[in-house]
Amino acid sequence: MTVINKILFATGAAALAALTYMGGGMGAFAAEEKAVKLPAPAVDSPATQAARETAVFAGGCFWGVQGVFQHTKGVLNAVSGYAGGDKSTASYDMIGSGRTGHAESVQITYDPKQISYGKLLQIYFSIAHDPTTLNRQGPDSGTQYRSAIFYADASQKQVAEKYIAQLDAAKVFPDKIVTQLTPLAAPLAFYPAEAYHQDYATLHPTQPYIARFDLPKITNLKAMMPDLYREKPLLVSQASK
Image 1: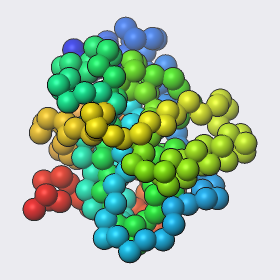
Image 2 (image 1 turned 30 degrees about the vertical axis):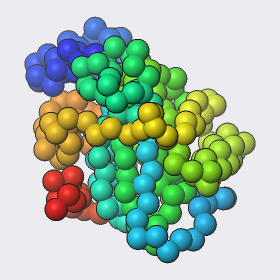
Image 3 (image 1 turned 135 degrees about the vertical axis):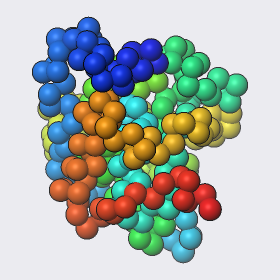
């Protein structure tokens, strides 16, 4: 969805018109936010004494992905931003063209003694997005909404590769996983998004786009992984203090 269409979607009365224009009304996206129960990764990251580590995931609009991980125990911060492109084009208006290489992404800082990288991947594939749709999530289309894991090191790459292979072999999804694996290295680093994008799902729960496409993800996390669910989200504004 372009920036303009997303704004139209958010205006309430225009929401239905925007959906109808993109493919047949509300029914076209009736099943978009169904979560899939997945097995835990057979191969996970090794134990570490580090106080914190980071993961970067892209899976459609970053509002919902950020919201899911802000409700996840063990997560110390979740920041919406851009990855896969150069710093000079890391802005919402520019990445909307789909030509900057960026994907809307979320940088997750977590305590590896409370939650593993593999468990974050399980949430990412099961709840945060649909990893089988190429360059599309719900009503949003374009390479900036692609499914992608930006790995920080060889360990993260190995865990992600083996988990994707495990899920594909188990045929837990009707289609093959299309998630890209991309190294997170300069100049293709992670760049935080504008301040107005941070904590968006929490701050705008009645916005039609958030209510339709993002809040159900948080509900799915609570229902499917109650042991990992945190009722009060850890917001960027709180985590930065």
